[in-house]
Image (tube, rainbow, N blue to C red; front, side, top):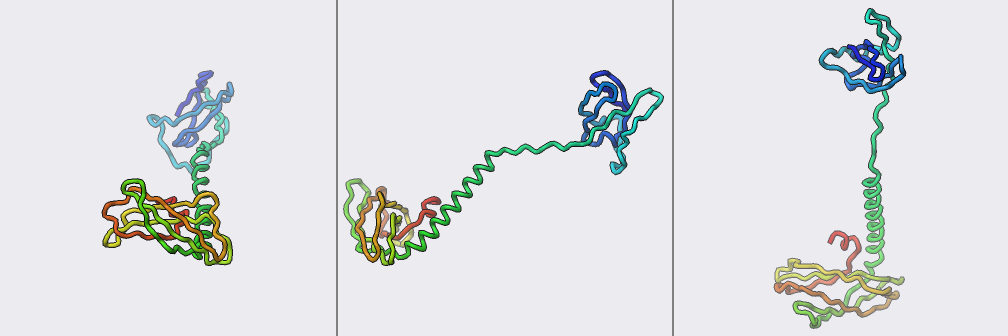
Length: 206
């Protein structure tokens, strides 16, 4: 096949194997201009690409020389760093949350909820819950998460509420504190409530 330098219009004879099926960069041996040459499928027939590329200068009756065949340099893949950083941040957050949740479960299994009393709320469809949280362990426990589920007459869960105790709620070892919680929007079919110790992982997927 014949190719022409777009700068000096010098013609060259090359083989389809030298250009390759995807094309390649070539350099004019006369003016040193470089360009990307694509294979002319109308005039070239691909042969076995295992043949060695010929880079020697060849004289022919058209008085043309084979151009310098530049080595093939694959295109560098461009990576968008933002999705990688965002994914890493999410994974890091989940790992920290899992570690915190496992520590939470390991420490807070010593908490016990007792003396549950219900009161009226000033909000329509609401309820105020009074309860005692006892720390049966030998160490201080801080900021428990209390989870309340409301259920129907068949004990099917209708809704769930979580209360994160505020401002450094500390429960000393072998002691108890009294807390209260306001919940709103209780379904009219609610008949029972269940109060338990929650965890931060549950809050994430709530």
